[in-house]
Image (cartoon, rainbow, N blue to C red; front, top):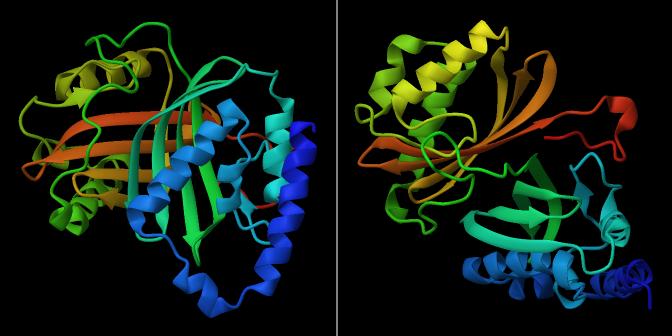
Length: 286
C-alpha cells in the first residue's frame, strides 16, 4: 500500500475510534510525561522508517499544523512523507523535553539535504493535536569555536528550578533581543563563559560581540519583535520568537541551558517566513 494511502486509511480508522470513545476514557488513557516524550521521538523516527504505528498518537479529527509548507491535519502529514524519495530520510532526535502538555525536540534531520530542527507538539487528552517547527540547513563544518548545532549536554537537570529558569531566560530575551537593553547583558552570564552553537558565532560574550560587529559592517540587522512561547524543563529553556534577519521576516527558535543561575549555553535555528500567499495552511507559524 502506498505510504500516503496507508496514513489516510489510518486517519479514518483513528477518527472513528475517537468518536466512539468517551471523554473520561480518553483522560484515563493519557500517557505519563515520559511516555509522551517517547511517543514524539517515535513519531519523528517514522519519517525515516515509514512505520505507521507511531502515527496513532496524532488525533486525526483535530491536528493543527503550523509548518507553513504542510497542509493541515493528518492528511497533510501523510503528504509530506509521500513527497520524500523512498529510504531517503534520516532522523536522529538528540534532545527531548516536556513542559506540561508540550513536548519539544531538537533533531538532526536529513531530508532534501541535512537540516537541524526544533519540533514542538501539544498534547490534549493523550493525543497530539498541534505541531510547530523551525528548520535550518545544517552546515558542513563546526562554528568558530568547534561546536556543531547539536553537540553538548542533552539531559535536563535541576527540575525543581524550571519556572525560575524560564523567568530568567524570558527576561534575557525581552531585555536584550527584543528591547536592546545592552547595559543588562553581562548580568545574565558568568563572565565570558558561554558556549555557543550558532554556526557563525564563537563562544563567549566576546564572540557574540564580534559577530554583531561583523553583521553591522555588512549591513545585516537582526531584530526580535515578539516572543510567542517560553517553554522549559529543568535547566533547558526554549523560546519561540519572530522578527527580522536582514530584511526578511524570520522565526527564531532559541534553546538555552542555565547553570548556577546564569545562561551557559545556546543553540538556535532561524527560518525565513514565506509570504502568506505561499502558506499551505491558515494557522500561521506561531
